[in-house]
Length: 344
Ligand SMILES: Cc1cc2nc3c(=O)[nH]c(=O)nc-3n(C[C@H](O)[C@H](O)[C@H](O)COP(=O)(O)O)c2cc1C
Image (cartoon, rainbow, N blue to C red):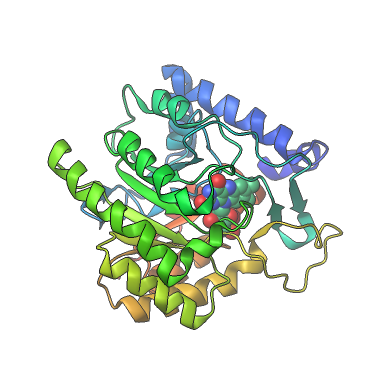
């Protein structure tokens, strides 16, 4: 059905379709009979497999990756599609417009996207309002946090700290995004010294929040797929030393494998099918290094059930999709879960 509509969808700019979809998902999730209809349409024949990760219970391993619902408007609708978790954001402390459009490209021939959005979002206050109120049963909500573009890099940890304080009471887990390629120099926070300076105060604040809230709010770190082995091991070492709860492997890539689309040379982060091999090999590498000490959430090039199973087999506890949903449509989650996932 979705595939029949796809040529029509492609007549519009990716961002226009995105706004429309988020609005429809947001409205559907707020109108109980429509939400019930969506849930019935997209209900999987298989329940689970349930996953315990970071001290949380996920009804299944599939999640919506960050950046799709940046402002937390559509997560109630996304939950109706069958996701076990939805990661909202990236949110920054203050609202910001992001980079000038056009800033998202569909690479249809490659089943990929290049984006250079630059953390366009309505800011922490807006997102916090969207997260208050009733939650759909069993939905895990992650909040992905980032720094404002105008915040100098040396002051980045103030942004992350204020976001941790704001969202710890509202989120099931937090994801520290230091790997978007579209905020100048953000990725340099992945280097050993910068990451230590960032994670030390965050780790202390996490302990404080746990005391205040009476529960541990897991903090995960999302890394880039473009780190070399040495940089990756350095970053993982610091993440372990500072008691972070997990890693998200990975964000979009600056690499440009052989691509067919005329948009292949646009600047920004590449996602979708062309980063699938890169991302899977990074999950394997990280899994070998971590050896089960903290969990991995896989993100990158997940387009079908085989991609999900490969990541679970490689050691990921949870698997997120973004670009796959754009190409396969809202039935993707049901399709994957009906495929029958096996947890190690
Ligand atoms: C248009 C777009 C916007 C994104 N925005 C964010 C973001 O704000 N924060 C983030 O951590 N990742 C963001 N991502 C990265 C995704 O969360 C995901 O990690 C990446 O796309 C790889 O997964 P995929 O190949 O399944 O798309 C974005 C991706 C796309 C395509």
